[in-house]
Length: 434
Image (cartoon, rainbow, N blue to C red):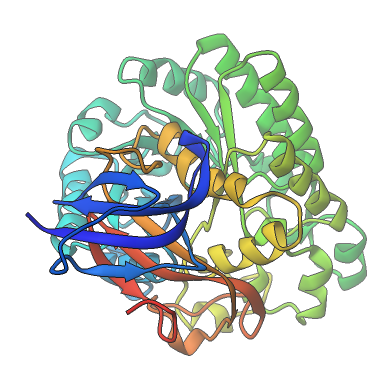
């Protein structure tokens, strides 16, 4: 029997409403015991975690891995190495590969490749439509059999309302969530920044907030009609937060997520960056008012999850003109520190609520193992150092890509260790842990 004891950690588990100093014993990859003091033989490896936080492993519901087809941006191996360095024990892989993950053999390949590497758990997301083109439904049930935990067309918003309705209805047969990026392309086409004062001043075509809000409203109505499981990715505007809040109050089965970039950065930051493509996002970075609304949505529970929307780009793609460059930034290695700094130390939410957003809720929304530290649960654990200051150094990234707007920024709070199935897969240099 393989064992590991984590001694004197501050164990925070929202599902058990637990936040106290405890020991945690792992045996054969599962949580075996939680207690104020656990005695073990001297031969059992022990991690001294005093002054550190022991949390259920973090889960990212939206990560773009380049493999297959875009290995020059990211491979599954470099992606999971970035995940564990960022404190994530599991990631959900977007279907935007080449070819698109719209059929079971590709779903199986992604799941098996992730398992073969043996770092962060990789859960494939299948495409809603064939080729993510929004014309014909993909075989969701067949992909689910091979490991798909949800279906999505990734950044390709589903424009056809009838197709979206059919997707929500069809997915009910398999109890699969449909995750969407809400964006009306007839309103957003050609835009590269948020439409507003900044876009007018800098002379770039904007994407209005209503382009997102129109689709949020439509999809909420369709979810209510079909009773399908709808998850809205990358919510970014005050109007969208309000629509989702009211839908939840009416009992409509909808969940939503935001990216860490959209809770911290604004269109004004884009202008001050001299329009570097690393600041180009999908959806675009919005206004300070929108950021404040996202904070309120996180505080009051409207927002269910925070994700990285890790979107690696090759250096050639970030050397392009801002308006022509593809949108997206890497994020797996910056989410946790930014959220600890801005949300916990910034007194917007408590630590338990942040862990719920990064672990408990993602596990519940996509029906994934993990998300808590109950006895018998997989020993997937993220250990945090709330005091450590960390600077974003892209040269130290495990990711193949370096496209981040956060380079050089310093945050208070860091990942100290990542444990998966009872195995230490990442330990930060200079942490208090062996």
